[in-house]
Length: 403
Image (cartoon, rainbow, N blue to C red; front, side, top):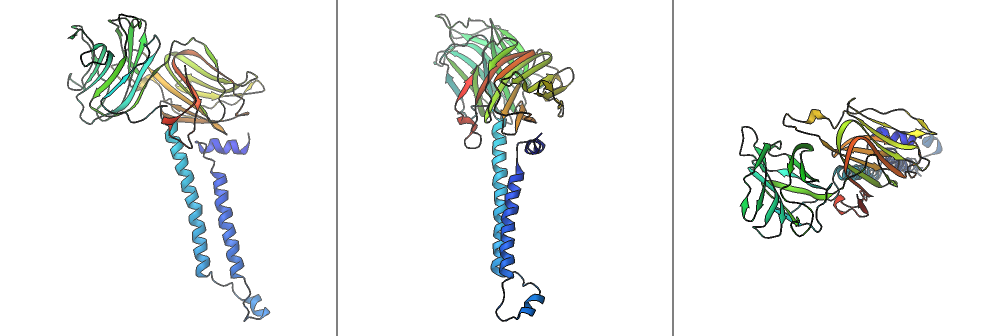
């Protein structure tokens, strides 16, 4: 493995500090050399023998200032480099499209929701919340029908409260109000996802399935019914993501994905069994990277091929997605988010917005052509786009493709 690749992986975030340190050393070295020349200049009032035996003159005030300036410049460069890396790392952890949304939040949906799509909201709860309402609207009027009313309540129940599902039609609430336990906590982040199934809503709270609810009105986009607005209001400190997309993906799923350096792949999926594989292939069908999520082993294994031979597995890191995170209120499956960024020297791998590992390239970083996802997994959303992380905010990413 090339030394520069090993260095990139060893430092963990693609922080190639060796070149930076070399620049600092060269700069200080040049200054020291100049100081040596300055201090070694012959003094006209001394004889040759005196110059030969004299102790080198102490650095002058100007030379000391020059040395301090060189050191300051070197460490300023170091600080700037660290700041760039930290900024890039923060952006890597974010969802695409994050920003501070105005509260209360309401947006128009331009097209009818279809089976397979997921409506996803992420924000921060206030320290003393009582209620947050998540609504699907038929129309923009205040008294418009609500085909879905999902209320997060903190002032009901013995513990943190309840999640309440209901509908509002023709000016009346349905008598059929369904309640489940509330997993959200005051002052913490909430992640709410509603997935459209055939005749049902599948609801995830903090990535854990908490319920499947019957649709009481059809979501066919016809004359009878169509969702055209979504709103979120209540005791939110902030809302930083609202997104909808996705579809029903086949399993196994394969697609063209030229993940060249600077590009990023985001996958949202549901764990359904013991093992799932995310594979990136080269043009010759070799594995450039395999991320094997082994729920039964409690491990995420990374590997690649060279000359059709598997290399050494990398297993370091605690399992970031497991049922161990799920509380007693769980009724179903759990979802996870995987992000893979192709950098010059390595892949950067994130689970659920947290850094998990980096994997040094074992071949050319530009020869990645195909994505495959298989195993015990149900893909809900896949996004692939160019990432200008060094220059602009993640909220302004262009060239994005969502499937």
